[in-house]
Amino acid sequence: MSDPSSSAHAPSSSSSAPDAPPPYVKSAPPATPAGKAGLLSLVATPIGNLGDISQRALDTLSHADLILCEDTRVTAKLLRHFGIAAATQTLHEHNEEERIPFLLGRLREGARIAVVSDAGMPLLSDPGYRLARAAIAAGVQVTGIPGPNAASLALALSGLPPIPSLFLGFPPPRSQARRTAFATLRAAEQAGLSATLIWYEAPHRLVETLADLTAVFGEARPAAVGRELTKRFEEMVRGSLADLAAHFAAIEPRGEITLLLGPPPDGDDGAQTLDNHLRAALKTHSVKDAATLVAGFVNLPRRTIYARALELSRDGE
Image (cartoon, rainbow, N blue to C red; front, side):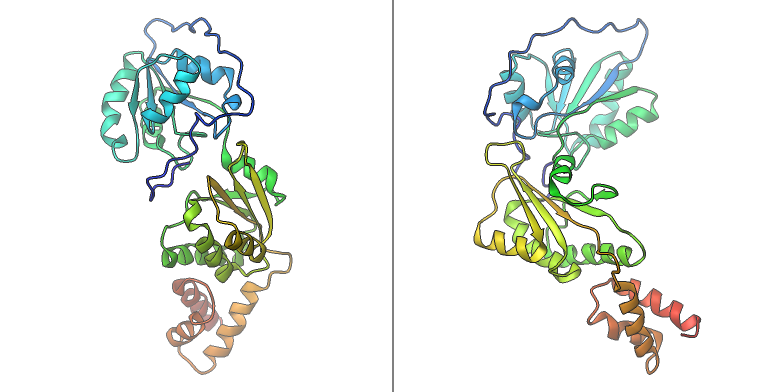
């Protein structure tokens, strides 16, 4: 769950757990049929509490010919804690594409390669997608070892509707881009989307992100923030966007953050409000000018407003 725009890493798998996990006992290696290609395993690792790692994850890592890590220093702490000696190499957004040919070669030769991120499930806002896609295309067997994931845990604890939900990774780091992204989602809601929205966020940007969400979705919208999940100081803050903004304005957010926004309330009239504004503007303005006028006080992308104004004008409304 690394923030791609920050040097801060996701929660270290070496974070101390309240209770130490039992000693890991290495199992016998699984048999590899002669002449078969290797295996690429996507392995979930703890998001804070070492006791959350599974036996299958430990077995897979202990028998891997190579472990691909977002940060080898972080993974080394996890492996050292469980007494696992294995070769590790980095795999991150800056080197993943160039490493694929070499890694596919190893897999075709029969190697067992595991992919881990600093914490949680690989590929989900972390490296590994391009390698997994290339392995699938090459006919290499790809499997996964499920386990801890901050987004799914926060969703379960949030009190917000769990189905449907939409995970969106990290919001853009700059406010203007964030508001544009949020406005696009608001436009999708006005077209019928109704889901709990989930993001990861860096703690130093949380207050600004809550302000941008409030500007687009309104201060009454239900939301939740999960902080330091599975760790000693785990916190789940629930309430309206206004409640969350007040809480984190008074108490500086720290640690790993998962941010959730509940779906629009029943009877959400955002789409009707847009149409009413556009109909009034179209009575005295061209389509372009009406869209520009309405865009000044409606938090939606300008192209969305223009497209709707064009539809209303064609329908003679």
